[in-house]
Amino acid sequence: MQTLLTNTMGTTFYADQKELLEEAGQLHHEMAQSNPTFMARSLVFARQESYMRLQPLFGLAVLSIYRSDLFAKVFKQLVVTPADLADFLTVLKGMGRGEGGRAVKRQVGRFLGQISEYWAVKYNGRGRGYSIGDAIAISHPKPLDARQQALFRYLRGHEADLSLLPQVEALERLKKADSDEERLKWIGKGKLPHETVTGSIPVTRAVWEALMYQMPTFALLRNLNTLLREGILDHPENLNYVVERLTDGQALRKAKVLPFRLATAYKQVQEPRLKKALENAAELTFENLPELGDNTAIFLDISGSMDGYYLQVGSVFALAMYKKTKGKSLFWLFDTDVMDAKPSRKKGILSQAARIETRGGTDTGAPVRKLIHQRKKVDQIILITDEQQNSGSQFYE
Image 1: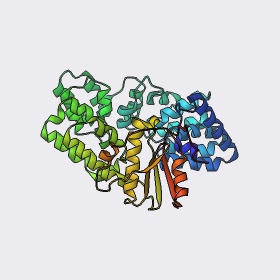
Image 2: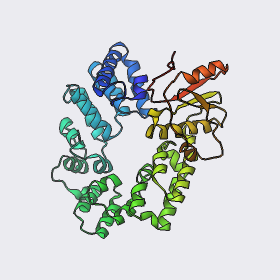
Image 3: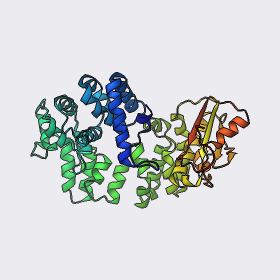
Image 4: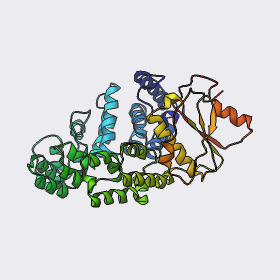
């Protein structure tokens, strides 16, 4: 469960990618042999409840070797989008299993039977691993009707009747359009996802403005800097629209935006109303965090190695959790020493986080020793650190 929920597959301070892959592979094989039923349940939990992708998909590929029945049972709960399917097939190939055999092809074929036009235009990028078209070539799903047959042919790069596929037709017409007026027509008519549009044509200011009004909340947040740079938010009505979207608590909850996602945008933008909107959004989004209970200790590492993005994210997350406990938890900063952060419940999360700075070395045992020394009892400890221990005693000791 720790491996699934921490999801570390890339290079870390302590191990390179090859080591991590080998360790994860060994663990998945051992679990598949010793307790495949628990493994299958764990993979689903990690994907569905904890929003992890790579480790569960890796585990699914291993499970397919040992228990094809359990593999078939959980496949559709783990492979949720075409991006999941592409990564799963890439893992299979990397394991030397090629296309995975009959049991795998059967599940891939069933998944492809639910491919929509929206997925076709959003996910069928070629040149990066497996495309949907590649998956169709592997599993040979049988189309249910003329429309699905046209969709499969299009995804395979063959000539198809696009009159049966209005959204796909809009994308293909967009690629050939030679004026903004025509481009905007096909973007609107096809309700084309912004990432599909930006990957298909040179994006002008007019196109960015049109995309802004149909972007999901997460995408709007990620593209704030571009909208500012293009001058789109110089217009009061556009700025009003973005501010309103960013402070819509229901939309933020639905998009599962967590407070630390706002930190990067807050640091980048200088426009006063946008900064204020992002501060308000952070206050709204900490409600997305789980209930922690009052008797919680939150320890934030502020040592030198945390400088930059780690501290930016960590401090926002820590402050949000502190507010979630209504200020009743302990919130200590530590390097080789420990200090009470004394945060304000009234001031904004992002503005307070921006004032926390790095210093000194790393002693993850320091805040625990202080707890023991002061005879404080807590129900849980949340430690936010890059764990580059270089002095004192380690947390576990």
